Image (cartoon, rainbow, N blue to C red; front, side, top):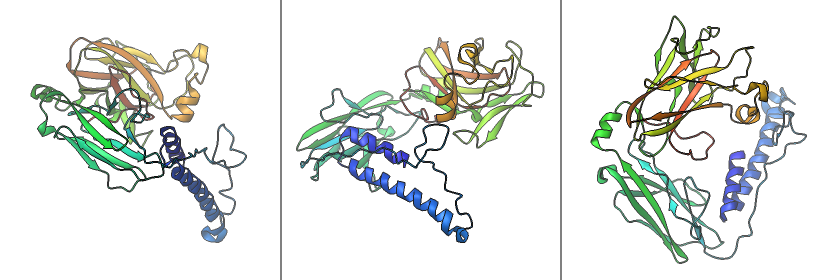
Length: 376
């Protein structure tokens, strides 16, 4: 219900005629929630569990349950009697035609072979007519078979037809009321890059992301990292055992997680650790971990480095714990050469549970879960 309500808000901003149908779907899901609660209370096992599902639970904005279940807000549009169409692309809330700037799909990368999409939708009550075609044979466009109010086209790359290096192409969407050109950028690795990146997390165009549990582990003196299955937002995370192990500060040896990566450019990279929403529960000690590339000195990060100003929970508790179920630690590293590197994460204090790692040399796109995991 909340996901569909979010889609309704986006569609209203984009002026889609389907906005009103999506609003009605939210209302239907709201009613369905009540029907599920009533069934559990009155019908299941002959009403044995009556009142167990009485607690209000929709529209909760604080610690206490809401006074009454409140459906998420929805928008409706006054749809005009015309045949206007709009085009939306993955990763952008804007629509074309009429938007300032080009429509550019997220870059395609031969190290991270993922498809993207374009959506074409009516903005008025009349049916729309258009054609969609590609300017280059290596751009593949396939209509989605799933029934939708708006038509989605999946975009992929025929890598066998593409030379190594950077290539650009265009998808043309043409109708009576205008033409929209969607730009497609693709980067294909050279044979040398492919060989260097073999068995490593790699990207040519964007961030590299991977689960913490994919590490090579190095134990020290019986203290070790181990996987907690089904923990957090993914299918597992890494934690230190024994949980009461003494803290270790660099340069003293400590249990380490190592990740082989391939980074195509020299420069400054930011490493983001997604860790469990731990609190500052150990007096007179940090909640620290160390991050380094290759032979550089480890950078010690403390989840509660500003505990004196921010207090026990930290200023981002509401966002990172109540909403995201994850805290973030970030460090910057200068790599003087592109190519093969090893990222190391070393224990300083036990109690930190590492879920996922993201490496980027640019601004990350806005998203709740961050970039998808890279191939290896």
